[in-house]
View 1 (cartoon, one colour):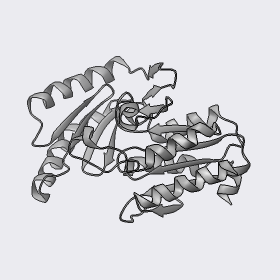
View 2 (view 1 turned 120 degrees about the vertical axis):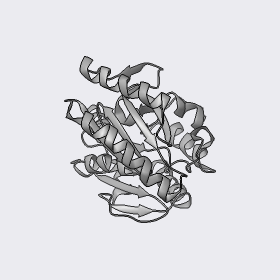
View 3 (view 1 turned 60 degrees about the vertical axis):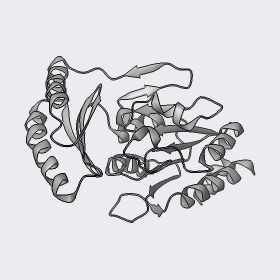
Length: 253
């Protein structure tokens, strides 16, 4: 039913997370290359000109075009939606209130000196702590210390805590759900829309897609199942390749 709508639509929305969805996780995120065959499928879909493809990621947006290495520019919503990189190269960032900027910068300075045993990631709109790859005991201690540092700061209006697998992010600005809603608002209201993601941060995007009046499908792309708002569960990388092939076939008909 959904792919029939994709086949009949002039433009359909293909929205995808990157890490864990288009690529496997790596401790060094710059080694996280797309699954084999995925860039080629996306390039074929781009070439048909019937899809608005957007990558919605927690990474800075500028990292994605280099990782995907597609022939045509791709739209990227980085920093969980707080940043937008348009295909023409224009970059937009959400603004932050002075109190928010001050609180984030103070935290960044602290964590640059002492990362609490984890991996600190410094973002323009967030302070992020990762503990992927640490032992269970070390991970629990890093999480405890990070929560003790981050949670009091959420009292500042405009800052909130974002939980993801093996990490915490104290951030300002829109989330992935906000990015998906913005994309849908800019598009034909009847355009079929899908979102593929794996992490807890993708749940907001699933909810946004599930609320669309147009034909829609939310997809949890993950090797093990978990509780989710997504309509269906597929295992990467083969489930991803099958999905993209079905999309391509629908739009080639």
